[in-house]
Image (cartoon, rainbow, N blue to C red; front, side, top):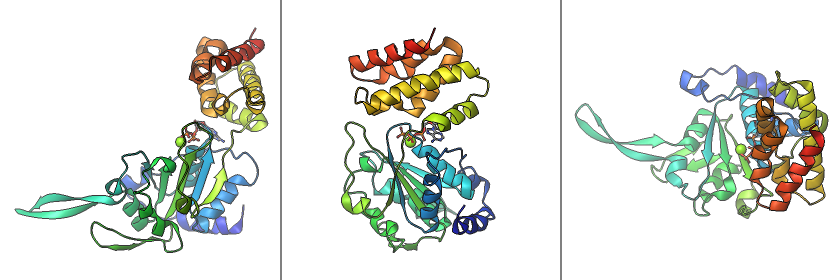
Length: 287
Ligand SMILES: Nc1ncnc2c1ncn2[C@@H]1O[C@H](COP(=O)(O)OP(=O)(O)OP(=O)(O)O)[C@@H](O)[C@H]1O
Ligand SMILES: [Mg+2]
């Protein structure tokens, strides 16, 4: 591991957090598709560059972000961008409070402000789904300035040195809105592929320790066929989703692979021909 990363980790893991903050520290377990990706993502975080994870559904983007939180033992706040995400849900809002008989206006800090001040991680999921008007708020936070003028309070907030942003975008998915250029430009971008082969085998063995080796092998064979047909253009990307494969493996321990694959993989595909192809391939591996 790069010495810069180790030095930064040594410094961050000794920080102490309240019970509430500690509850925001995630569990790791991301399996890197190659020897570089995981370290390169960590290095970007250490260099205080915002990280953008791009990849299809169920490729481990959220797991990777969780693993960063686990690696640095650092709390992570999450925002899920939807069309109704507004400045309040990012920064916070004013509210009326009663204290000692007096009525006062108080500002309740949102995830961005909390993470910046406390030096936590901020995970922004589906960042491409947010309304174009909302995201420019983040521009000054994401570039070299690492600061924000809170429009609700006028407060100028400089980010804590440990503050980092990790964002994710679901790419290769029909209906995905493209990401605004000025926003995209501020990130270091990483493509997150579906893992396969030996790495996928290790992941399944780790996650399903009670599953018979034969079942794991069957699921891996099915998965490899699906990956090949995605490459051939006969199946959509989602057919190779690791999330779906893991769901199928879990179900298969109880109901066998055929129905498990049908419910977890085939039924999610829009095209009837694709659904049939998935089931035909599956049946070739099941006696
Ligand atoms: N490379 C990987 N290492 C470890 N776990 C993985 C990996 N790829 C997928 N998974 C597992 O697959 C499941 C889905 O992963 P995750 O939720 O991180 O996907 P995602 O890319 O965030 O998907 P979405 O775009 O739908 O949110 C999780 O159980 C996760 O642990
Ligand atoms: Mg996710």
